[in-house]
Image (cartoon, rainbow, N blue to C red; front, side, top):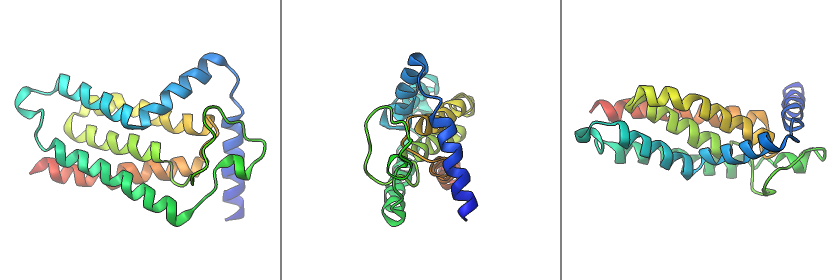
Length: 174
């Protein structure tokens, strides 16, 4: 376990210490917001623009509830694990943006962006495929900005996707 933790810390510092380019810094600050309600709203707007009129609201409320439930479960896991954020563990962490103090495991931004990815792959596969690099960029940005370790991001992505995809498929098939 000590080796995995050391690897987690080392990989975090490699990614985190890429900071310093003003354009990429700004891109990561903006891109991380796609893992919040902003990204969810953007994806839903794109879905509504693409979906045939009769399908626009078909089970969308249930699918949105699944994503919201994933977000709630993320909060519960954070409270259970109570892992400190990188700046509190590694003093050499570079923080870009707000200095967060709540717990870091798992990454809520990743839970949301990968839950959304799962839903989009079920309801609109081309849109889901287009969202895939965005979801990965959200995860990268969380480490780059200095707020999450790689294991926070990886678990958040896995929990968001694999926790929602089977439920979304079942709901959409009804």
